Image (cartoon, rainbow, N blue to C red; front, side):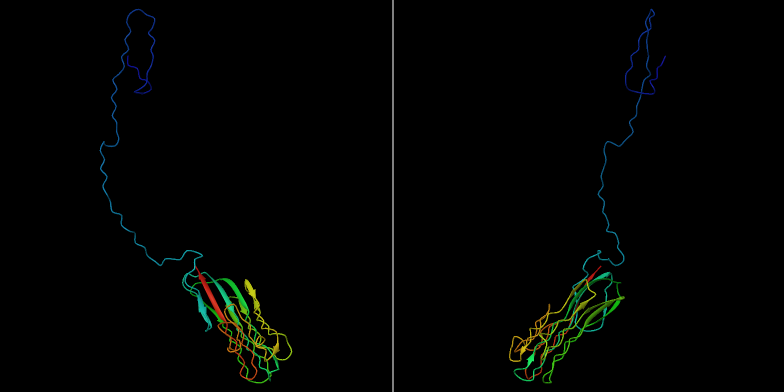
Length: 254
């Protein structure tokens, strides 16, 4: 009689012969297995991978600087580039002009330096924003007069305007020095440098204008302020030194 072992084709089983006389023969059925699988020999054929076609304009990685910082020394409107989502604005007010003495003993000082402000703004791409660059205080030609104040530099995004105030004009007669410009609404607000303390018109050190982060104040022999945001020097009889204009520097990010 055939015996099936749960359909298994392998393994072993022990049979105990019955306690009867004679010969007991157990016949197991023949088993035939077919292995179905991979062929013994496989051929790998090289393939060529074509580059995919990309359409559209690549967008910069978030937080990356888009291009070199933009330097603004004139104009009134700035437009963000495509993909720009944030800008970091630095603004510097203009310097005041130096005062003019009435004679070689008159008390007079150079002009004060412009204030400095920095602010991070979230902005929209390809959008115009307004600003103003402060003009330096004009030199004085009249005897015994103070210098003129420098203009404010401003930048506006939405309801927020940052202001880097212009430096005060040089002092004549009574005060100790010309004050630096104020700074408001920035993440960083720095008051401009004061001019040297008041002295006689013949005291060259006291006639110098205040410096700034980007410029040197006017001095004897070069009375007009240099570069940006610094004050002009005071004079005795000639036209006093003019203050230097303000400046805006913008770093743009995607």
